[in-house]
Length: 183
Image 1 (tube, one colour):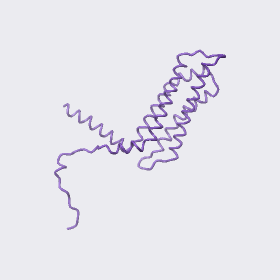
Image 2: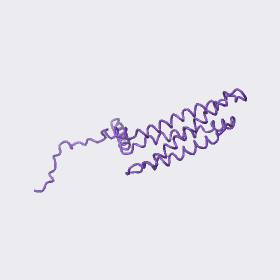
Image 3: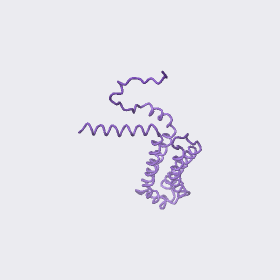
């Protein structure tokens, strides 16, 4: 019974590897989803920080980050159509949006830092301001990891293709070569 379960796990892992070999863009896509969910699920602390500080262009930065986080999926999914060459235009748009996200997050963080450290009219640091400040740094790191994984996909795609995912079937080694030449 335990051997059947091990075979099922091995077969599921083999199928997963075959899927990755055929479509290595799954890996950066997963990191894009993780970075979007991380930002979206922590949006309340960013919004609370915005309402407390009300710095110059902070609302616009929050809007740009959320908009580009959604639109980057559209560009990324159109970059790699099935059984076709990648579309360079969509790849460029994907990177433009990723740069916009990072720039907006850095701008938002700098506005938080300025509001907390200025001498006149200093904003008291609360839990959600500290959480937003650290969360934005983590979001920047996740977006950069997604961009690096997307850029290095041709390299690890070749490495994935070298993995042997064929199944050894009993009796295949004993088969003779079939002669297809005309008699």
